[in-house]
Image 1 (cartoon, rainbow over the protein chains, first blue to last red):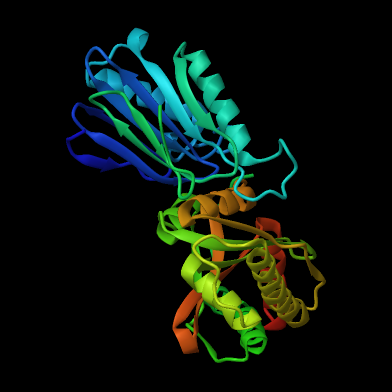
Image 2 (cartoon, rainbow over the protein chains, first blue to last red):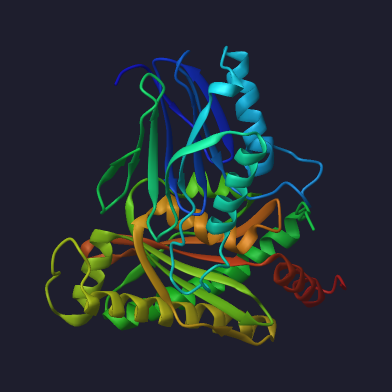
Length: 160
Length: 207
């Protein structure tokens, strides 16, 4: 792993050619979506906050919502030479940090479902996923290898 | 559904005052529980887009967060946040037993939940008295994780309907060991409107 570290803040999308590490810190309900074109080594990371931009028009920031952030990330990658047909996705986040909320009724779950729907709509395959549960995640996406590291505070690191 | 919050200087001052009353009652209760001095910093009132609040207030550091939902005339949430070392020290001060280690034991979790419960009750009672409203704190929930992850969960659950959210934040320092933490109040948008209307009545500005 090498290259510059680029922090992707909440409600932001960043795309980069290799080598770079795209990092989002402390995903709770938020979902990190890493998109990768392995043949030209172009990657992007979206730090998505809410499931849908519906009801929030005019949309102030496309990177904030799943339905607008995914198309935005794809456009950014295409500008760097990526081809939509080769792009695959890895996703992480969408947790329920406190246990009191009824099983299915939390933003994290809605975010994960909306991300999957948005990816399906663009015909992008999800090749790896670490979502849900009740743990915060920091993600680090290496645009040379396409590896997504998912780090937790007390439950170690997963390599997707 | 989406709205932007525009508040005048007078309204901000009044809200800061309300937050300050609540926070001082909460920290006084902490001082009583621990039988020590607890000092507080001037409460901050932040009104910003939710994403800015989250990225400003939280990083990767490990914290213990106690989350108490409010119901009744004011809905929202009160959150007590302590770094883990401070949380362990605080429990030790209350129980008289030394901290167990890096992980919180079941006993330590339940003491912290109770601390959060008592502080939130004092906070919300002070608000309720001042505003003449009925506010009921729900049972506390605790999580230990990255500050940013806890805050993004809490703030998104509370404020996903609005572009801007309002947060009262008060930092407190627990004198003998110099440990510290924060207490947050985040009312939901409708409750904030109600609070502002009541405050305007109080100063004779009408609703």
